[in-house]
Length: 272
Image (cartoon, rainbow, N blue to C red; front, side, top):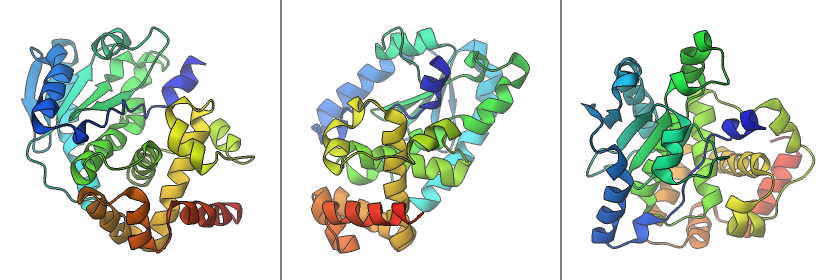
């Protein structure tokens, strides 16, 4: 069960901070980063990297690798941010839980909140043999996923449903990093799917999170199939301008959310 929880790496703490006044946003960001304020610091083109001495070697590698991944995301979803996000490499699950207040049973490989991306360091991936941890981290770390959350916040200013955020992040993680859902989870998607209403109102509490994430990714994949990157960027521009999500979909794709969901369902059942 623990391994399956880890594979649901895309845990986003969804606090819609971009809707807060500028002063409140700064307070939230400062609160998230307070725990890591005295850690080692390394600046890159895209990130302010924070880490402990224990992970200095991993941080040196991550500095270059993270910039390459971020550049790939920006090539798909261009953005102009006023400041670089923090990228924090935590040495163990206990630190991750403590810094974000997770319960003992919670686990994630990555978290995004308030302009801060936190990744679990490769040496902490103890469900993988020690000699294979770095290689596994290179293959499956969720940096692309979490950085997409950051870019979406910058571009759309929090004006979107949770399922779209997770779907877009999972879509780019698959497209750019080659991460696909474990077969056991993909098989769950073969039999049923959640309604649009449940995806929109209950995403974080749906009982089958693998199914919810797979479905959200598939819907975004459908939007990409319709109009490619141009359509996705047009949608983000409208969201960033304050257009409601349902209306923005209609203006870009000629269908409101319900129509998009119905068209996607037909596309998916046809093997899309």
